[in-house]
Length: 422
Image (tube, rainbow, N blue to C red; front, side, top):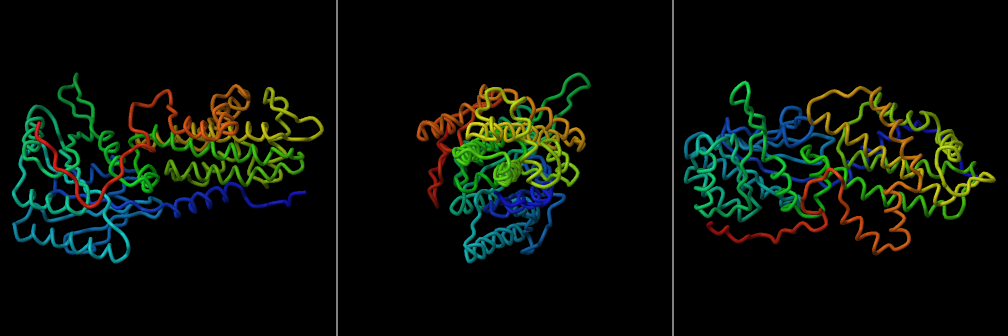
């Protein structure tokens, strides 16, 4: 008989989520640009929790500030003083080089640089060109044209392309919608392209960190979460392959809490205590794992069509996988909902989250073996090689056409070919 585990499940979910985040290797990004170019607005728009405002800023040199936050696996380095005289600009460059040297001593490196230019001003100085050339020898550089509205921005982009700068991309962005007249507004654009290009330049092992931090491409978060969820589904199928007595159903609960923590870390959502209680309560309550396990299996026969053997108090591997599928996929739907609302600066109440989780969980349970996500996971069980290929190639109904995480190019350090002229 499995031992009783009387830990508080909501608290355990929070604890394990934090542990998952702490295991993620941090991505380091250098953000360069003159005052007023829109660096803070760019950072707050791309990355969650308004990092430029809420992150802890620590001056590490006279002209370079380090910005980070405990629950975000990312470190930003913000430059200051580029708008000043040539002497100060040289000091900024020296500070960057010193920071890179110090990072190397700690086995760290800068993974990508965002060099920001104001497209409305349409000017790049010789000292900036030199800085870009120097940086490109040490890290990939993305040239970002902020406030890029109208023909002037297009002409500036063409001018920069003809300079044949050693950058990986030149991306025009407009972070916020721009109202031209009361009747006409130009929608924001460019941020998703920037996120996609960043993924393409970052080493594979840093994708989970960048995905956690970014809030532009929620579909990408959901796809990554589904891939990981299917691994847990297969694991619970294996646990239940030797039939589990009802009384021992608690062996599934720690695995499922661990799965939920992993999925939360992928999305990078900070759940408050009330919301976490609501989520756990929606699937059975906030008591012990023993209680939750028995509550889940007590409803299997009436909720899950064709769940497998529940006669005689036995849970089959199929039934265990069905329950985990319902839990994982409904939770991913809830996390997607929260992520979208949060990115739009909308407040989501714990009651709303609880009701949504309860609704989606029940719908998934009723689908049973007809759930496409369960069927995909079972493909992996029956043929692991084909299953892995299917998971890597999966697409969601709402996703746009972007590069798969598993096929994005890796960087060959330290040099890259220059862009050719159009």
